[in-house]
Image (cartoon, rainbow, N blue to C red):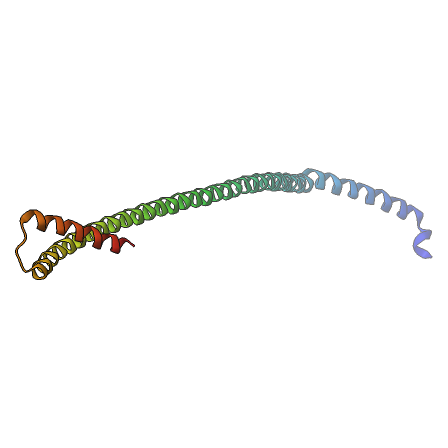
Length: 169
């Protein structure tokens, strides 16, 4: 190969290649690498910050979830307590209403019993009056004479007692 036969040129070419490569590296190191490294370092810091923020948000989310779970549990407990209290209150109201109804029924029964007793007394009084009158009239007709007040009273009492005895049997 003819190109490799010229070693003197080739040696100088290698030398200048190394020199140019060194200058190129020096320029890259001085002007290109610092901004690139700064950008890479900034990117690294940003990624690290994002990871830390993500970890913090993950921790906040876990904390928030625990807080919400606790609040939900408290809400369930309060709801159970409210239901229990309302059931208790409902039973109290039901028992109170039942007692009031029973008292009212008892009162109505007593009033009815008293009314029946009054009506019975009134009826017995009317029956006594009619019986007394009937006894006096019938006795006067039978005897065809007037009876004295004592006889009338005695006959009336006997007739009333006899009529009441038959009514009670």
